[in-house]
Length: 118
Length: 91
Image 1: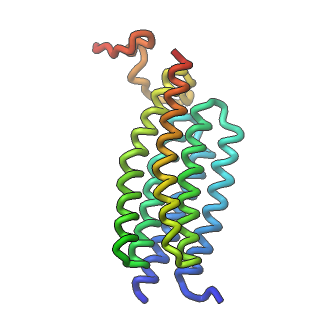
Image 2: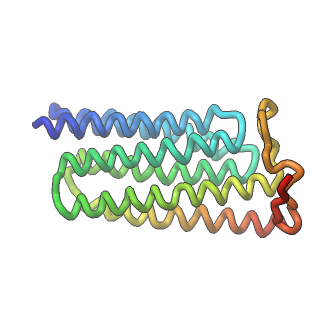
Image 3: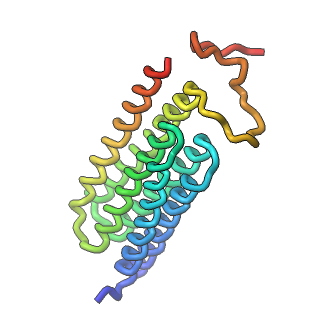
């Protein structure tokens, strides 16, 4: 009974995080800020929802599958976000006009892919 | 009929998933650049996984978790393939 309530709270919390991530993807001004919203919050939201499944069903195979999904998402989401961000920078997609610092500016050679130091 | 808290929570969660799906799809349709669209597609896949997980609580059928496993595997491959393709076209 108490497990059911915990699972319900976890489920709604997880979907609220997914909603936050979608709102951020819609509202943020820049590809890099949008990536920040879409990657982290949504993986955390799916993790919370799967945790609700683990608490509610409490079954060995479900736990194995959920842990597998969570580990895989938390391994692959940063890699995918890194690839997208790298491509966006290489395509010279403009940053937000209020961006404070671009640390790769005048340091990254776009032809040879070499990063120069000071 | 749906009086138990987990079913009410699953219905609320499905409604939230629908709103997030529409927001992500709006970004997919509008997104000024192609990487924006890739980000939106990635988000849509994760939202689909969330929808399936909510639906599990309505039907009490744990079998649907296999679909979530497959989606988690395929979404990463799609995103990385598209990013590699764009990168090679950019250089």
